[in-house]
Amino acid sequence: MTKPQSAFGAPQKDRLSRRCNGGDIVLFEQLEPTWNNPHAREEGHLRWIVSYFGGTPGQINDNPETGLLSTQGSAGLMWLQAGGRQYGVHQHTMRETYVILKGQVESIEPGRSHLAGPLDCLTMPPGAPHAVRAVGSEDVVLLWCHDANEEIGRSQYYDESDDRWDSSRPPVDVVRWDALAPTREEPGAHEGGTRRTTVTWLEAERGPSDGVLAGSVRLGCTTIEPGSRLASHSHPFTEHFLVISGRASVVGPQASPALGRWDYVRFEPGVVHSLRAIGDEPAQLLWLQEGTAAQRAGHDGECGELA
Image (cartoon, rainbow, N blue to C red; front, side):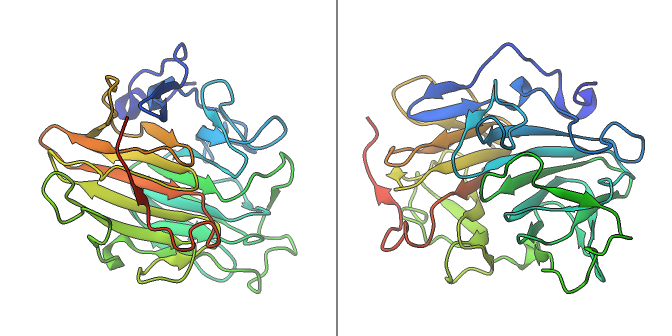
């Protein structure tokens, strides 16, 4: 079974991640979907997963050959068939977060539920029982990310008859896209050539955003206006970008491939980097920063010159 052709195009398995202008690029089409989760091949629970990055052998990483390795967590995409749901419920030893990219879901949790549509965020603290159901006639695609690596087998799967299905467990937090106020607080965001807006779903420390306090990661979305780019900058932690609409390229002396919907690039700590919007449409980039509050103390993104 492969990625649905109407939504994703034909997958290609013969290309590995490539390095370009300091970034490690993973093209969505090169990732082979996996069906490793419980009952993932059964009607009513059909879903596949790909990983852009994940842990070392023995830890969660669905695409170790074509994705990237990380010591601090994992992230990828999940496809869920219209009308289907994840089998049972599950919980993790770390925080799991979903950002809905396509379709609409209903969260399944003890004593409550939430509807979430495109660019809404559901975030589950450690030990929170959860699952999602695809509602409506459209298949669901969502970003999933874990804020730490988890050994395979540590996740717990069960059904609602289990004693762990308990409303006293940590709840799922919801951050609505339409409740977030876009800002232009980053360096150069108001200036011609680097104009962009940003919203934040998860914050590593309490700040001015409307996002959830997550502690170990920041997760947000930046929209780069046509013809503009991110101001060149670096961080003392790893930064990940996923193109969710429009097209972008990695700025630098090397010719960058055009990154389209659901293509990904990672920049390691200290690497000066920038991405540019290509074409007549804005480039919308989901970004994930792995730095803790201690790592980012006094750091707002160091500006620098690209080599």
